[in-house]
Length: 168
Image 1: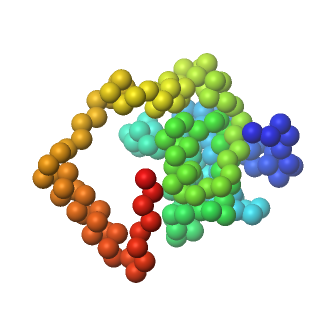
Image 2 (image 1 turned 180 degrees about the vertical axis):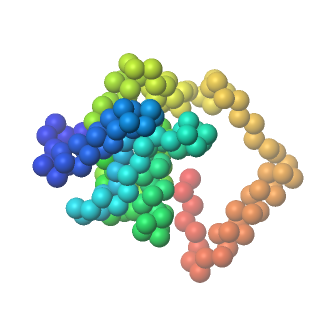
């Protein structure tokens, strides 16, 4: 992340941090805030709503992306910037990639987040370990169930007028 931010970046990042403070002090939520910006307009804001919604994916960045998608009526945002009070966890970072967000600006680092009891760094580390060494046991189907699942994907790809480009 650049050492110095533009005045526009400072304004939007300050808003994300303000949202995190409000979430903590006024709403009793975990202290995270995020906004999606296109040009100079805030498209959506988000706070962590994990406990409130009983949804482990309802992080501030995901909530901001959901709000932006609903408002913009699209799921891809290649013209947007995400501002987050803290460096996003792996899930939120990947959500930004899925949304094709080209730029992310954050305040506190994952080290800061980890210092105050959040598992982000542990999760980043877990993803670097060979899958059989991870704490989550993952089992892949073989045979007919694998073939059936792959056939559905093949049917989806066959719907497009141009061949799908493999991303292996």
